[in-house]
Each structure stands twice: as structure tokens, then as C-alpha cells.
Image 1 (cartoon, one colour):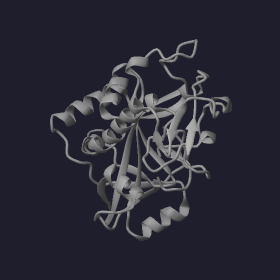
Image 2 (cartoon, one colour):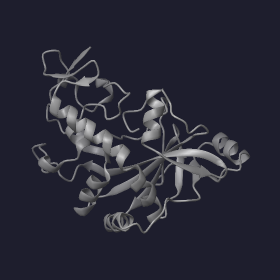
Image 3 (cartoon, helix red, strand yellow):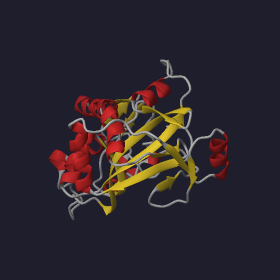
Image 4 (spheres, one colour):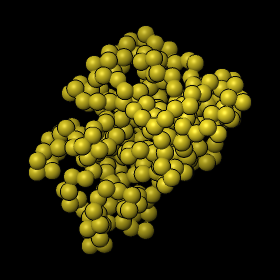
Length: 266
């Protein structure tokens, strides 16, 4: 199967997004004074052995093990560049003012960042006229047609794996130990740019261990009751800055539970 695409420079992909970053990219973003949030979701994980399922293997590789009460979970923590409205680097003519140093997630768009998800044009921000068979080839059989784009994509995915130990300790440094139940939404930690940079520096110096005492936040009464019955620390919350609920459609990207859609992540 072939998918063709050419950017129309509409600028839609540069508005109202949360961009998944590596730790190094997050430091560069915060170093310019821009907002970086921590987003978490967690899966119950009773069996920590190897998995032949590609989705489960990816989840494990990009998450760290914790206990919520006495129940084993794995937490996926994302560092995301958040901007409401236009990206701070978007120029009036819809060109990128940070083009040479833009994050990998921007470089690969509209390719899918996760290895088990297919690109679906209808779930991208690009207009219909960007997708035509007479456009340049974007991917063939799920693989990028451009070798350079493939290398950037591979580097992005590898960073999501390599950064896991740092992100586990970063949560501790920032005093963040809440997570959403996977498929229901994302728990959010908003942190000032300077505070993030300080925390990353402290983690790099070995000053913090992994965060302990994790709790689940949910906006669903049934989930809260189920977890309470298991003696898991749980807090029932409403949608807001600290909790981004899922929508009842399939996910756009960052997000993994094969069900509800996360907020507009990539």
C-alpha cells in the first residue's frame, strides 16, 4: 500500500498541539522559555515477562514499573511541548522560524510516531488536497519512503525508550506521582520552564530516585470504585488542566489502549 502526500504550508499542524519530545528536546524547548508539561497514563501490568505482541512490547519499552498500592502498573510518561494557538516559532507566512532545530516529532509529521499505528489522513490536520496519488510518495507498506525521514523516525522512537529511566526520576524531582488509567485520559503536571531545567539537571547528577507512592486519577466513578476495591490510591477528578479526559474516538497519535482518543497529541 502506498500513501502520497505533499505539505500545503497551511500551518494547521502548528496550532494547538502537545508535541511529544525527548528529554534533550524538552530542555531545548524550555530553555527558550516555552511550556513543557508531563503527561502520564498507566496500564495494570501483572506479568512483567517478555511479550511477543508488538503493541505490548512497545508499551513496556516506553514505560517504567511502579506499584499503585499493591497492584503492579507500568507508566508511560511524556514530555510535551504545549502551545495554545500558533506555535511560538510559526512565522506569519506559515514557515517555521525554528526549522533547523525543530523537534523530531515535527520533522516526521505526518508520519506516525508509534511503530504499530498506520497513518490515517483523516486523522491528520493536513487538508484533503495534501493527499493525492500524484503527490510525492510518503510511505509504502507502512514504511517511510524517504530514508532520511526514516532515520529521524527511528531516532525519535529510540529516544522514547532511552529516556524512560530519566523520566521516572524526573517525576520524583518534580513531586509528580499521579497517573491516569490508560485509555481514559492523561494526568498532567504543569511545570515552569526553569523548574523543569533544574529538575533535569538534578536528575543528571544522580540526586533523585524513581518516584514512589503513585496514585490514579480518573473522571469515571466506576474506575474509581474498582481501584478503591483493590486498595489502590485513587482520586476522582473533573476535566481540567491536571486531567485531560479521553474522547470516544480512536487516538490521533500519543497516545495506546486501542480505544478512546487522547487530547491532540503527536
